[in-house]
Length: 496
Image 1: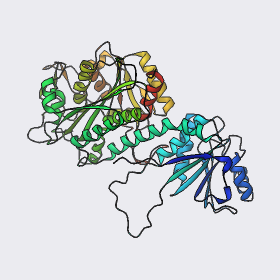
Image 2: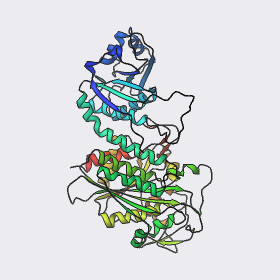
Image 3: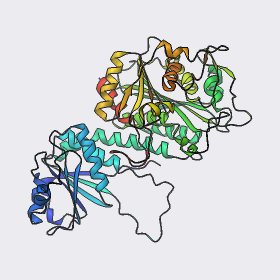
Image 4: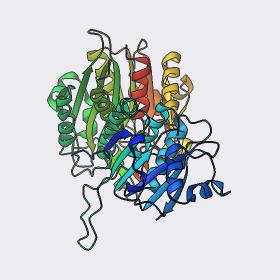
């Protein structure tokens, strides 16, 4: 069951009975400190309380500012939140302000008065940001019988032109559901999100018009996908390759391909990880989760583009059948891989998934995503994903989409010097180049399985898939990083 985004409704602000509104009321001041119409109306009823709040030197007229006022006279609403989008509201201001509003919201119903607060597109993104920050994964939490059940959340949006704002918000509603789908997958424990369960949830998108094909171990063995299969051979869960097709563009047009690493749990295999923090390895399917969320978003908003999603689903476990350091396996491409470290498993899953995608689906361009290396966290922390590209035009398109969507990413280099680190004396290539430049050598490993004529981007999302503290758009846990960037890439560069 997917965590449902908070429901949002739209109505004309001119019809509002400000004194009678209950619950929480969100109103705005503009970048110059002037109260917007809804805030001015509330201020008149509340004896100038909002005017005094804005005049206070502690109130900053910048994006993300919120002031919470409680139990004002003249209002049934018990909470008023005064917010500001800043002097030059845009996407970044919308995300910051929407997230700040959501963090300040108490439980229950809220009314948001948007007239005069900013451009329609900015307001739509502000609402999306608020919905994203209100995500709450509660699948396994029992209610405390001594506590009052939480009041259900809802957002009633008042606008000058409610139908127009609703239309502008519709694509963001699809995006929010796609991001929630990704977050749910990443937050699930591995005893629940097995390879079978993951594949079943993806198959459920057939009801949205996504074509789904599931390959099991027998089919993959016949294709020669020994690199992927080697990773999962120590697990009781069957390895799978799931292919999702969204055909919303011109018939016969080559698709954009999204390829994801889906290691539902990673012990490290025989090269076992330390016990401390291993519980977080339920997130090692984050790349596949992002691909799934993008495909769901595209289907929900009926994107006019051809996009395929391919995810390799495996579990990396250490038993008597597990692959060993020193093993040599043959990939679907036909090249041999020396296994130096069984914890460098994601690149082996992706090697066969990338080659399958090119051989069987003939994409016009390809993006892969993976929680691939700890090295990218050493390089960039938890603030940026690291990414690599072989085509400058495709690279520029992705960089613009990621910046516009607020998915922070930093491009890192490829080059022949890094290839030297993954040469093997016994096989065509080895699966790790050591500690130095670990994210780059992993990218060069994958580069070997990309054809020269296929524009390709690899994104290492190990540092941005989870947040320990919460962000503007996500509470603690899974972030859904990448769904917004790739959806925007499709909208701006692949839809006719």
